Amino acid sequence: MRCFLAVLGLALTLGCSRGRAPEAEPSFRLAVVTDLKGYLEPCGCTSNPLGGIDRLAAQIESLRRGAAPVVFLIAGDAFFDAAPLQAARVDQANRNAKTLAGILNLLEVTAVLPGRRDRAQPPETQLAVREASKFPWLAMSRDAEELSVEVGGLRLAVIGVRPEAERDEVMATVNAARGQADLALILIDGSRRDANRFGAIDGVDFVIQGGLDQDAPMPPRQAGRAWAFHASRQGQGLTVVDVYRADKGQPFVDRSEWSRDERRVQLDRQIQELAAKIGAWEKSGDVDAADLDPQRIRLGELKKEREALDTPAMRAGGNAIVARWIELPKTARRDGRVEKLMRKHDKVVNEANRVAFADWKPPPLGPDDLGYVGSAACRACHAPAYAWWSNHRHGVAYMTLQKRNKEYNLDCVGCHVTGYLKPGGSTVTHNLDRALVGVGCESCHGPGAAHTKDPEVAIARHTTESTCAECHNEEHSDLFEYEAYVRTLTVPGHGLPVKIP
Image (cartoon, rainbow, N blue to C red):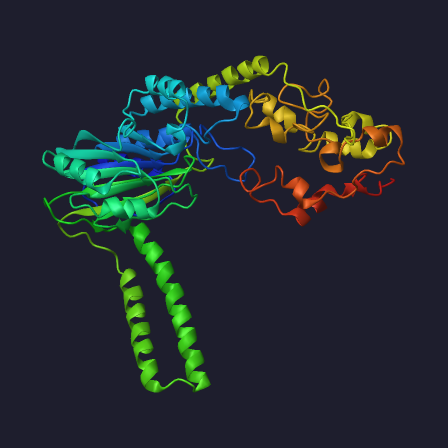
């Protein structure tokens, strides 16, 4: 009974995932993260913020509580999201990268293959982050580099490869490694074509595909002779691969329910499209029956394959992989140790930026620019609108950052103040003595200095979609629909007459 509860508890802690593992314990388990890009946590303004290094840590901890040993690998841009960095962002990004390295130390990362943006950082930046890392960075000094890992009684050759590497060089590295290793795995930061090129090398079993920089994770796919794995980006989740290795030298078979689900979707679409075409050809009478027969046979084959997918997959003996994607939604469990480190990091970055950017002023007004005055200057003539705004999410936007020690965070503040980096507007520290904190009237209606002096000077009464999209974009406001959003802002006192009791 106690064993059953332990297994059940492990299954529940793995969160939302696609794919079911066979009952037997795997030889080992791969935990894969790709294109992390230095993200400690997602923007909290979306409907379901995915990711967070504290949530990832909790999942890794759950995996390690299982019987199978875990190999945790990261490929693609791991520490930085831009290269070269803007001068104003360098210090915050470097602090972020070193904090991330320290957290990954706690998670006992097996190895990291840094991406192009990581490698493009100045040498002193790379050195500082590497010194904070207790795990190896692969392929930093040469195009292909091998690391030997003992796992589950097997020796795994983990080979980091740059996309520009010559195939012969990688082949030589694989051949040398396979002389001592049972399995070979390549980490790469490149295109699908790069993965296929190196996956086709004899002796390569698996490819970890970083560098795609796409939100959608991919189920296992054939890359040459190997199986390639991908895990979204920005730490939105991780791909877990249970590896069953029974027969030396035999190919691996994909027995992932995740792959079966994807194939079902593909077949349903193909069957629907082909059936519609056949129906149209039969109705038109323009196609000979002899020409239709191969299409009908093809349709039958597709339907037979689709029916077979509804039969539960049984794992026979031999080598197999079972992959699943574990998404990290806002409801996912967090690692308390890591969460404390993140909150400490926020305070350190906030204070450092407050000091570093104390003298950072917005661009001066040009001859044709209008100045900002702040929402309080609108109150005298627009009291109902001001009262409504004060309690709206726009009005308290800056306060939400203050509560989390992020009002000086360069990743956040621009969408929580008015006139950010615009002539006469605000910066991370300058905001007209707090007159421009929050998403004020002038964020939507334009600078109001001239209008407050002379109400006959027009301001923008209707906000354009492009103005809203400066902050309400896919990354920060995934449910935003312009017309619907404008309707929520059109209320008595703000676009509609005030109701008189």
